[in-house]
Image 1: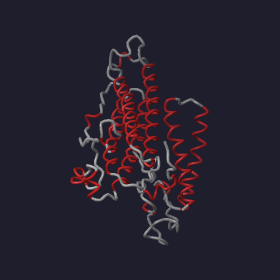
Image 2: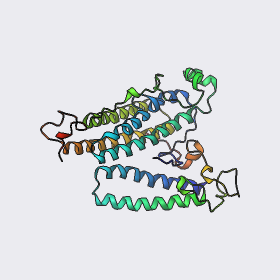
Image 3: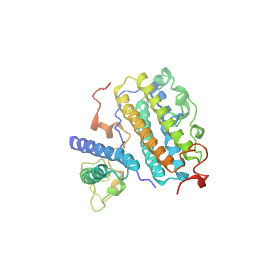
Image 4: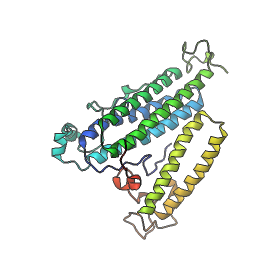
Length: 203
Length: 107
């Protein structure tokens, strides 16, 4: 169960309209390593996670990713809410404008719609945590790329905050992986599925 | 406006402190220093949320107080009447709700 809090986790205050920047940032909403993928990945994987502390961590990180999704959407919204048609055309935002005006709709920077195939929920604790670790690094790389391309400090500041959170999440997932391994036989960590082949998990 | 921004900034800061500590405690559940800090910051946050709800509007639905008519300082169409204050105040994704830490540049 979730309840809403009427504030952003990190403030977004953008004064310059820029549909071009919005179209790039859109990827962190609905793109392959975006916040929608991140939240759905963790919130889907948690049900079968054999260690309840790790299930709890997935819930808390998945919840924070929902707050990050909101920050990205607020940036895209503020960058486009006052755009005119000429600006949309000049920035290549016209195709998106035709279908969505200035509404938020999850897609990657290149226009590919959000797709659940961007993340996995495998039902294997080691495989899923490896995916989560990789996902945090891929999201960090995407933020690095965006921070290199975008000049406006009003956009860069929340992106730098989000980038730092990817690093923290990577650290926490690394600790979760150690916890899962502690419950396994050290001779064959990667030999079976600890969620399903329970006979190999230590009491 | 200054009082609102100062208070919101404080709430953002203490809440983030807790967001980060929560994940840390998920993987370090016995660490006493972190447990004490969580308790201390949590209490501070509760006080600030209550103060913000009294002066302006509730930030969570749990802060709604129907024994009041809401705040004079809050943006509402129902001023002076007993009403549902959860709808009062700025929308969080609008610039107006986020002027508490207007960026001063950055790298």
